[in-house]
Length: 231
Ligand code: ADP
Ligand code: MG
Image (tube, rainbow, N blue to C red):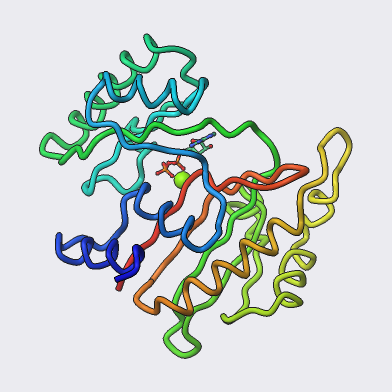
């Protein structure tokens, strides 16, 4: 069985609907979608060991089948600079999560490479009852949340369609560099759209997928958070 199918079957076996972030990111990696380097630590000592391997600064995030929106419960802390920060934050996140949901099952803590700031985009997929898998693209933050500046295509998308999606959002000029903002690697976004299209076409059991945000640089891009929900 492929790694992706193994993850899906494990999720179903446990009676879960959504993949944990490390599971979703493993699926992304299998489809050539770039993600921040990560490891799941089971205790503080392991978290420090992984942080040193990944390189500071790192991000720590809760890994729990009972928590889907991690930052809502104080489950994400960015910019940890040393072992002391990691140990302290490990305890703090566990406490935050328990306070929110006393019985939350804590699988461990995701130790993650900290992606430097740059332009943020989002790629999503949903399943239309009539047309099947559908892709969404937009710039992150206020552009999607407030301005609803997003665009959709029915999957599978061709390379031309992927390029159209990127150029037709109103915020597109920002991707080409604006004032002191660097230009964003459009080719990297095209590849992410094509790979996401392939992923949702080949795995029709995906009900919803969210790569939010993807941070895009002058060269390359990194998915910082990935959510996948199964039917
Ligand atoms: P949530 O489950 O709440 O959506 P996220 O994983 O998206 O949690 O983390 C919340 C926010 O923290 C992100 O939107 C991003 O701004 C920041 N963040 C998370 N991971 C990283 C990372 N690896 N590098 C930089 N910023 C990050
Ligand atoms: Mg998120």
